Length: 364
Image (cartoon, rainbow, N blue to C red):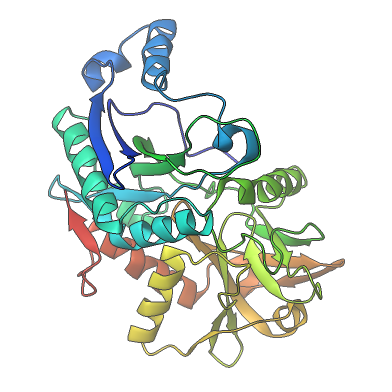
């Protein structure tokens, strides 16, 4: 699978530091840059040196509770190019709320969602003024924007210095940006397979978007990719019967009776923003939706479509699921009608070709 992410970060970054007074000290930092056109024309080594300078934060401590023990969390959201040349950020307040909840879950001071939203929009605006953006391409409309690009916004927490086991009490929040393309290769297999690895367990941190949660999924995803699968599917840690998540996404199943089912938000399932959005779109379209526990046996016996959702993935169809040497193929491996409908509406809202009746898009 080709990676959609690059380290070609945009010049403007945002930093906020929690203070002794209980407030956040905010600042914007303009990293070294030329114009995007000039940078593209640079020799490879010279461009690499410039990009490395933008990925350098010498003012932040290397040895701390984040780098040593994974005491950190992050978010991912996108600013989507519109046909009129503008950019709009998708549901930043929802990501801000989740970021605050994640920080609280790690017992560090929570970064307020209103500051989060304002900072994401402002840093995007500053980079846009310098010419750093994703440009709209009408050709993307032909396949529901599966190949569409966007500005990827990555906020993350970072702790104060520390080497002994401890909690973060004075975090930074950093926001960086880069252009991002399609997460899944549209030409590659869209097969999934269950795994015996455990992503999260009851009473743990599975509901937090924290750094440590991505170790097992990344190892597992890369292992199944080598075997020709796009996704691994995690089952619950206790009974090993219930579907919980894909290796990088929330997961949905359309059953033969027309009901759309997604695993309920136990403390082992991440509350995805695209997950929430797809549920709201489906309900608006009159599609029966159930958030509940669903066994892998029910999937193998009765599911007729399957797709995964996430900030990077959008809405990506799964052509088949393999479990214990049995395989369930959905719609002959093609994108199902409901998957296509939900994907086209969500992507259309994000890229501005479908009316934003939900008020999700925030102008930059």
